[in-house]
Length: 634
Image (cartoon, rainbow, N blue to C red; front, side, top):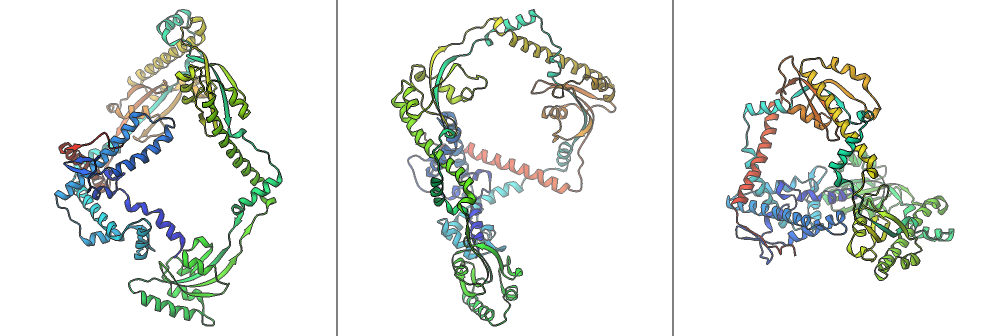
């Protein structure tokens, strides 16, 4: 019928191969049935050869993904991890297939039929549609026999998994205990002492600074640096001359982007072919004859006869749409009609149609002057990228041919040679020093020996070629050279100790039974800058999913021992950023089992079933004889 239906079926076809258990993440139903032929580079699972064509195909796809994260070279351990993961999936799938066969699991024809019919991809208006089924399988290179055979294999494996899942159970006490823990609330107040709050008052003396420097002397060395020269090629600089004549010519090549296609409003009456195509064709012919009678109300006829649930109640109205919205023969019919004309019967994969055309909205194209600014912007972008591409090829050639100098590259491409006298990893405010690929190239043996680097992509549309000279190896620094840095580090260390001391003193008061509100009241006047002020969270009930407090604090609160009645459990926690948090735990309330006790029990049982399934799979693997070759992925 409509094109959107076809598009919808195409987009959701992947559901046909959707994983039904965790081991089918990559393999789907093929993993159950494709282990039939031998291969010199195969896996062997319990003596059964597992062909590796699929493994190698998945591995190449994985390498393509990894190459985006590692554009220069994918690390060997990363490749090995990908290979191991794929082999593990193949082994799991083979073991399950063997087990299903050994246990003689069977699936009835009706179960296979029901499984196929329940796929949304094969349904039209909520009902299984045979035409849609055959059409979609054909577009994916499947025969019904092959697809249904794979469905049968998949259902057998799912039956094994289900048997393990439904055998899991939990006792009433286990349910109560789980609910008590998961639904538990704890009343807690929190005070956070930021290290930054104490920095201004910390004045390390000379002895402390000297002692710290001597204890950490190895950390105070000059950077390993070079004098870096480079040329930079940027797409933003690759501009081209432009005039109105050029823009107009370019506009003609992209005019379709600014063209709104013709649209038409049609109504239709659909009779689905069903199991008796001849009867459907006879019925649509009768409806057509009735629709062309003088005074016939097409909208009323559509409401009466049409089997398209999506449009029947709107009198068959399909709205104003362009030709691509409709499917094949239907689209050709609508766009060959005149307003008011009725045409039919028209056959599509969805049945027979009678069509009436109500309206034509002509297409239109924007004029050059209307879109000139946008065309110019697009032209500059397109031409800049084209010119940059040409320059990129040139710079790659010259970087190799003139490997001992940047001058030929600069002359040929009109670039300026830039210099950084003291280039090193981590150089502040420098985009090249922040790029690991540039740093690696600058300190590579070839570049240090006087050669140009290969062109390096710093960012999309930004390429550099670098040379290095005058390397300076790391050397010890004197205290005077780094005194301000050492003083800052000592002050921060002292501030951290001050924050911890104040936090521990507060925790001690709370543990002695002093009220939280009374203890924190004096701290209100101790606040400083907003980013460094002491933060106070008055007592409130929180759950394990609390988001307003730092995760470190929430974890510590729920790990703390519950306080005795009318007492407080107080403790300090050093946060990841070095700040010190003090929490006062005053009450613990277990979660309560409510009216949904059955749902809670079922949820826990499903979790246990998942564990049982994985344990079962692990046991199969432990008992299996698995042989693999290092040549599998070659």
